[in-house]
Image 1 (cartoon, protein in one colour):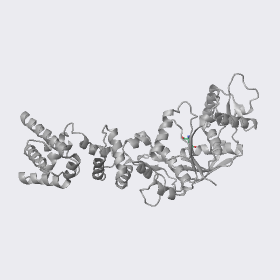
Image 2 (cartoon, helix red, strand yellow; image 1 turned 90 degrees about the vertical axis):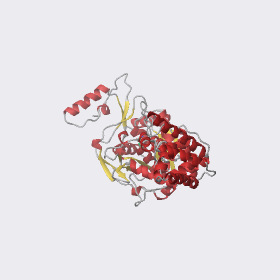
Image 3 (tube, protein in one colour; image 1 turned 180 degrees about the vertical axis):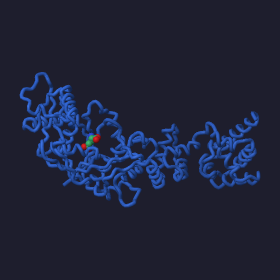
Image 4 (tube, protein in one colour; image 1 turned 120 degrees about the horizontal axis):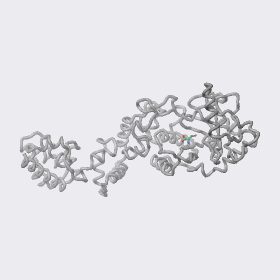
Length: 470
Ligand code: GLU
């Protein structure tokens, strides 16, 4: 049997963490078995579906590298097919036209509520003899009145549902657009899906889908309902917990490798292993190790995983990422050698690319102003002789390396009889705008001699200006 899985997002919003994990699980199952991964856009909620959401979902999947073998298919392109099957079901007596108006349905619900019953459709139109004229009916599925449905789930085991709890659901709206539970059955069947892996918020829908399949004489695919993802406070993951859209993580400086490596652990494990690459996951992922319990999303952990990936990826790859992130920040650069140096120096210091850009900006842009605290501490008038000596010493260097510049700074400290920090810190503030940067020799190397001297000169003027005021 060829394994065929699908990811079936509704384009009513961006791709979020939970959706990405569902897509990843399905993609891995297909790749592990040499099967096919299909993308189906479930756009039958015509009021809420948008092209932007579809584009966002496609962009997110492309960023994650989850390539599809077939699709994207759009359900709205297949309306005739759903209409035909729904009508066939009516003809064979397994579904029926329902003419009840909104008001009638509300009245039925109200009456049930007042009797303490669970609101559900009461089947009025099952036995309606004469259809009212001028009403465009919906089509309802005739759910068996008795018996139970067993969902044999790969993760949950057997879950039983009583038919008496399920009402006659609408499968086709009066405008000819199918509802989710109906179109999903037709599509999973037409597309030859062998494994349906989706969030367990859909578990309650599955018995309805199995009943429809039964009525159509279709054999079931295998089902796996994966646990929810919760925020660190135990509530369902939502915007309140920070970014939930996949692309927001991209923009925040996370690597796709890290994002995947982290989300695979939400509900699945392989011993204590924390870092996975996709090709390894294709080998080892299996549904048997998906937990039943909800997983919780932890941004700090994701950030840690990202840092591990920054440490382990090749310099070339990181250079490309840094270049892209700098460009988002308005800094265009073609100097790949400099970018390489930057990456080598910053890869152990930054957890995300946004942070790496923050720590690298000084190389490209003069500080607009000095950080207030740092200036107060290190740029008082005591800094003047330090900066002037540094300018002379660094200005005289013929060779600009980590060692030669470091040596020059040490020499200034010796001459002025100061501790190294009393020289290096004013220099750091002068050239980067703040008091934290890589080693002083590395910082000077990154900046180059010319820019260094210009910035020290600016700092000298700044300190002199202070003196005038003071
Ligand atoms: N369109 C559904 C959703 O986005 C997919 C459900 C399914 O995978 O069957 O939740």
